[in-house]
Length: 142
View 1 (cartoon, rainbow, N blue to C red):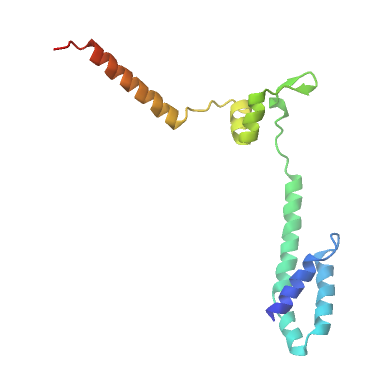
View 2 (cartoon, rainbow, N blue to C red):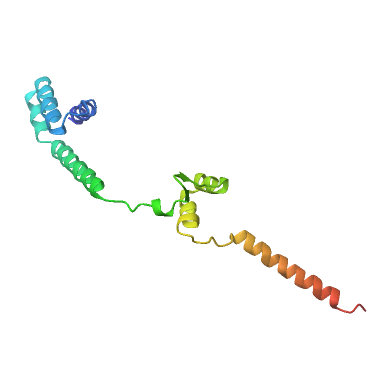
């Protein structure tokens, strides 16, 4: 019986774009019912698949309506402009291509990036070696 459900799902995927799921299911169920034995038809009609499909279609519509109603805050006030055009430097474009979130933090929100851990440890080791070299140079030789 799972095969009939798979055929139903495949048929549903092949429906016309503007055809509602409920109408498509009605047509698919009628066509499948004509090809099945009475016992198979009874099992297919007792399947919860139609309710799941109709429920997911209504959830999709509700999600689309909620997304359309939501207003995203505009970043237009933060874009660097000169006259009617945008002013973007090559490093700004490269930063955006590499990581849009990093661009947003650096250029839009003006949050300074901390030094990378390897560069921080590198500068620490440089300071340590400089200090030990200067101490060794200052120590008297015996």
